[in-house]
Image (cartoon, rainbow over all chains, first blue to last red; front, top):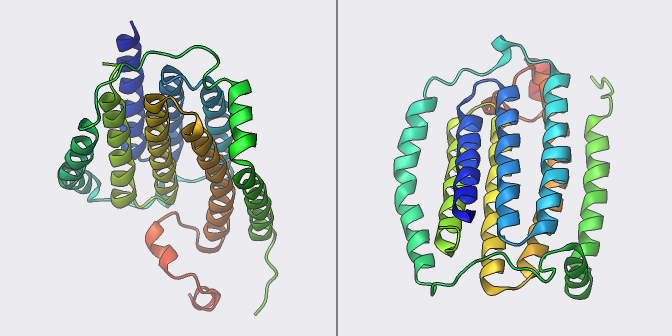
Length: 168
Length: 107
């Protein structure tokens, strides 16, 4: 049962990713990315990370990609504004062939790990309570630094996006 | 299949490779941005799979931090795209090699 769920989620994730890099229109690519991210959220749930599953749906599919869709619609891109990419398919195929040795190397390194069953853990592992305890006990300083980074990104986005003064 | 670490790592590596191929093959700046997001997600998947393997929750916290950094990156990257599109009226990533305002005025 879990195998079937994993296979379906993996199929949607890989299909969404491939659709993202193959569609010409950014709108369709963003839709494919949403499919891929939601399927990945399901894989997180299979790995006993229910809180990250929620974060993935709410933050990635709900906020980041929606912001991206909003910008795509806001810019009102016409078909002739899109850059023409004559060598797209050739580059993708050649790049895939070149990436195979790299992937084999990584998989070989991981296959030396001893086999272990990865059934879904209960007992609140990865749920919001245990997650919060882990976050605020061991990772308080990175958490605070993240808040400063988000503030800096907010200020930076506002500075970039304001109206430019005509200066010569 | 869902029991072994290797299948999750294989899925993550496939997604990472797709993101890398998107970055090297596409010129549309939006697709490049989405490919970066996909690569970040693949790394998140590796972190969470290893966290389940070791029954530790620290990788999940790292994954949450990566998601927060991706959100910050989204805000800055998308506002940069808006500024550059307003200035140059193109989404081709090649023309973004020249960022100077002086050159833009001469064109």
